[in-house]
Image (cartoon, rainbow, N blue to C red; front, side, top):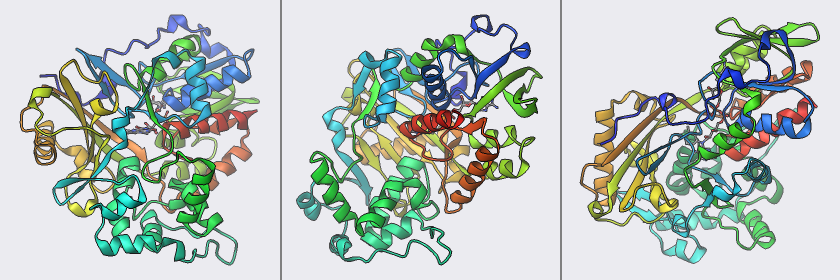
Length: 487
Ligand SMILES: Cc1cc2nc3c(=O)[nH]c(=O)nc-3n(C[C@H](O)[C@H](O)[C@H](O)COP(=O)(O)OP(=O)(O)OC[C@H]3O[C@@H](n4cnc5c(N)ncnc54)[C@H](O)[C@@H]3O)c2cc1C
């Protein structure tokens, strides 16, 4: 049995922590950097990559609070188990992410999800129901009652809504209201609500469609109907599927954490860990970044790639108003419970991607991923790994559950859903108190404040998952946006 792991940042098996001796700026306090990046998660590391690519002759320094980089994107590799702490992969459809993977030499280690992962399930009335991949299969599936299926088929005939008010401002709509209006309440509850908790750990009744799923928002606006938009997209890309996201989930032989590790190794000379930035202050034409311990790094330009609650505090001395808005980004908590079993313990097959649970089923578990079925090498020979999620915006108390309570819930769930009744051989628990930012219907106000700040202060730009997308690909694109902004 493994030790319980409730604080991912204390893992000691990450080989990328840098010693200060490696830094090009032996005494950063006295030097002026052209570029400083604050925060060493995938957003900050991507920003550093783009800066090095665009300005190879400029001086750059990434400052990370913890003793190692990667932020949420870490993998624990131990005794043949490969356990992702946060994300387990990214979709291989974003050229910028693939460019970073190539440039840091991680391409040969890339691993695409197996074909098994195309099968996704919903937990409905205590059993797993496969989400159909084709329209005919959908008609015969149990994911919706007949009335719900018929209502969904009426989608092309639903009139598009009014998008702007009289003053030309976009009228916000929650994801749930959008889904209910276009595809009916049953599909909103059974299909959309669990997808939102799977991606955002979020409550579809509070999150903004426009900010969480901008493509879907644009589809209705441009084509008047999702079906019509999908048909048009299918013509452009015949392999596109309506059942799952476009692109193949991609990771690395030793888990998602390999990517930040490879970026860190490539740019280790430009990274300083153990520097918790406390505030940014004006200093002549540039800025001073002051650490919690009183250290100072001077910079001409800064990319702030910390989570929003830290970013807001950092700029409080520069613009108090913007700081308050940025600190307002709400976060959902999430606990990830990874369990490993011997194959002979398995009475039900765990082939597929995993399952999601609609909230109306009133179960504590948001869903579970069949990690070993998605990617090879996640468990020792003869074993398999599951990854169960508890918490999210609809269950804020989930984060407070003890290890024993969490394991009881997981045990009950895998027994009911998968027929696995034995004790797990491996357990790892990761509690993310500030897991995923929630783009609620007030998100635009926050973005307005951010844009205003960046315009008034063109030598500071924001990256990170709190503003323009939470997926790893979004983080990479946001980092690129921030770097371009500084140029
Ligand atoms: C459980 C879970 C599963 C997920 N699964 C997926 C998935 O499968 N696919 C996907 O695409 N996305 C997934 N996501 C989302 C994705 O992981 C995140 O959006 C992304 O990793 C965020 O990266 P980041 O660099 O913006 O932030 P973080 O990873 O939070 O990094 C921020 C960094 O800033 C540092 N920092 C904070 N304050 C300071 C300071 N004052 N000074 C210096 N440094 C500071 C932190 O220590 C940290 O290293 C998942 C998220 C969670 C929580």
